[in-house]
Length: 553
Ligand code: GLU
View 1 (cartoon, rainbow, N blue to C red):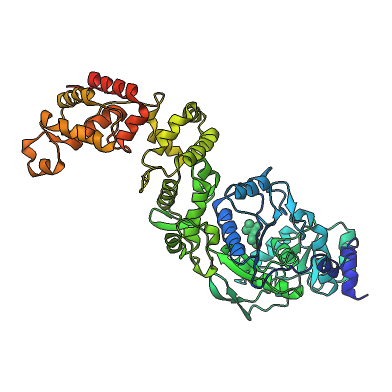
View 2 (view 1 turned 90 degrees about the horizontal axis):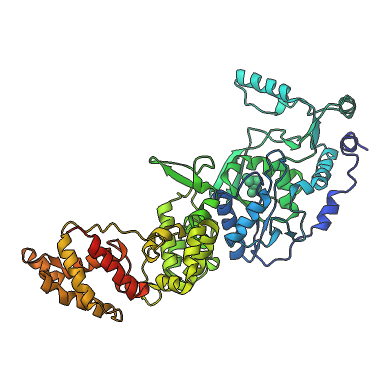
């Protein structure tokens, strides 16, 4: 036994497997040429946030575009920061957004696939096997420095303007002997395992980032920690071991990891693994008083994906919007393929923003509006009721009291329209938008436009009651108002009125506004003739009479 092998045996006596054992257990995947194996590795330390959803989408669509695999792996090595139900929240959240997971955690409690366990806290023995091998090769060693000692070194480095960190001559236990280690362990001293970095700060490494292009950085010379004192790996080490054994081909992750790439590439090399391709996704940004900044979990409600559900954004519309910020060529594709699933879009990492795409809620509203305008009334009914059931129970009761009525309301300017009206973008707008259809919500303060006098309005409404025919179609409906116009001093045609404004009180259009206000309390609504048909003759007559009695003359 060499000195290094003795060290390995001293530190990890219970580990009896070898790296080869795991290499055989997790053979290469049988996939077609060009298939990419990608993953997200969320930590269950909080709710599903926009950045994770975005990363999941980019990974998912990468796998889909190449007939590859998208898997999830739970990074739960920091038990102190873990929250209860964290895994469920993230995985169920992804499922709700239609992000299909091929392998790994497919629900909060189920994992699937041949490369597991997919939860780092269950993989301790695997990490320790690989660490033991590194120690036996003289590439890793135990470090007994306490937090205070490390802090002291750092302070000295700062004082002397030396690059901080555990490197070179500051790597105090780099050459520790087995006997020394044994003695310290016997004294009950705790220790971590560090990599013995062969790197040199003066050397540069380069790599090709799938999104950002060629990147050059100094080689890593830091003896960074592989296993913490509790035997749990650091992110760096778990990343290398897991992505190797799970045969990840492309690591697509947040760009906060870019500065760690030299460590990762070095680790892959020392472990004898082929490094994956890296692609670093810039964070989603937001404009704050004219300045671009990262979306913050602390400051921005939309950072929590729950926000979108609460507001009543359809999850597929959020995904549609995220696709527009993920790929600069997505909107052109969408114009050419209005009905296709986004899943058939050929995604290319190179089309991603290098510096961070801007999250623009107005754009999201716009995308959502366009998508909702494409739905039929029965689909809107289902989705709206699903949302209301969860987030607005009172409105849900109102909507479902008479489903046929609600569906006819939703059909207005939608089902038979060649160009459906673009109005709702999210379901929490519906209550106000449709309020006048429901007596529980309807209010009317009969505010007329300035150019219309109360007495004229009442006169019109009185006459209108006499000619109102609920079976009129749109044209007949407006035809009657036009016929009435000259008898009230209003022009039948807007043109006439415009040409000679002093000769008239207004136009037939103004009369229909009076009627609109009488029936709905609003100046702007979908097609009024259809609204009146849905409300029915009795209700319309009642509302017109109420208006006659309420409008001040
Ligand atoms: N747990 C890491 C994170 O959430 C994973 C990064 C990775 O994808 O490798 O940032």
